[in-house]
Image 1: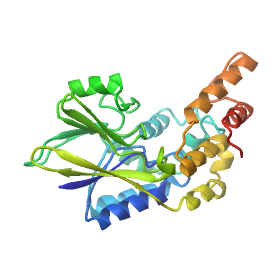
Image 2: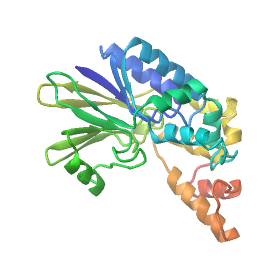
Image 3: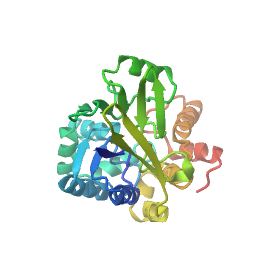
Image 4: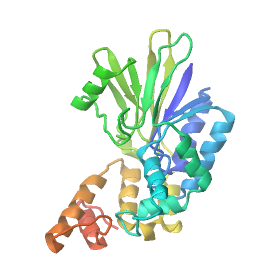
Length: 286
């Protein structure tokens, strides 16, 4: 049994297509998808169409990520709270390019699950952790150790951190396939994993692949994304282009600058000038 594991696509349909093609060329026709399908790149509807086609043709297992939870919560809250701008414009753009079918698909997905095949070891899988899609299980962290101590199987497969690799502890392991769409490190190459089941274990193999980034980078301008979420688009393009992510650092700095000058910072109403200053501090030009 061989399964291609893909996580954190973030609307990058070009990278997704590259990973699927590579897996199929290796004879792998089973796909485990770990959430964060939409967001951060233009045209999320193109990723959704690819996922529906993949589901029709091959064996697929889907779970929700935190981005899918954001979309569901926004719909449940009467589509209130997001505005144009770098603080929430990316979320708004994504939501407005999804359909009722897409949101229904997200709702039908579990938050986490367990995979069991006859003659093979069972394993658990989730987006962030089994407790929360937003929890980060970094390699060698105390949180990861605790999760493994309590894990009912010997393997947990998860995404969310965008950091590809394996963490082993107490005879158990966490496998993270990396990010398909907003990949960290490896010069921004798209990342996924293939796992192969044996009687005693699942063995993981990691891949980092070149793909046509220029298609995605140009579409930030032609899709309207850049106008709706200017600095978020700049930061996303930087990660795609280089594999270096400073998004959280810039976000925190923009909030800090807003508080220093105005005395408060109410999300998502952080003026663009603070975002722009924080981005320039990181040596990123636009």
